[in-house]
Image (cartoon, rainbow, N blue to C red; front, side, top):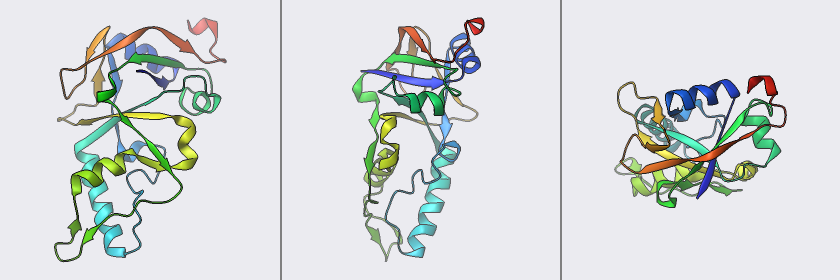
Length: 186
């Protein structure tokens, strides 16, 4: 599958030169409700999920991609107001988590006696993949990585290795430039 990582021109040049992509932590993402898509009416559940989000933020990060390189909103939001670049990658579907968009928050089972979420790994997967329906224009795909000490980048090259596995991602043979990217930047 072909996916795109949008960034500013200077970051794209740095990413290509250093053969890497930045792994974002969940608290750095532009959606303040990231990982909080669950229906949390009970205050105890909200407190538990706030702790959960903090723990996950310390242990894991993501690289975000889009399946839609031609959407002007994406260029405006993620490619420095149409002056940036979309780096295209051919990636195996098995490596990606497709984001699901919803108008309502999913219900999460919470065991009151054990004070924890029922089927935690399924819930984590569901929360990582869920965003409010207004974000649907992004057509987002994610790669999740367990962070190692001071690891903040996913290394790329013509055939690159993902930091948490030996599965290759391949940089496609070209880049797309934003409509406002000046030729002197090239």
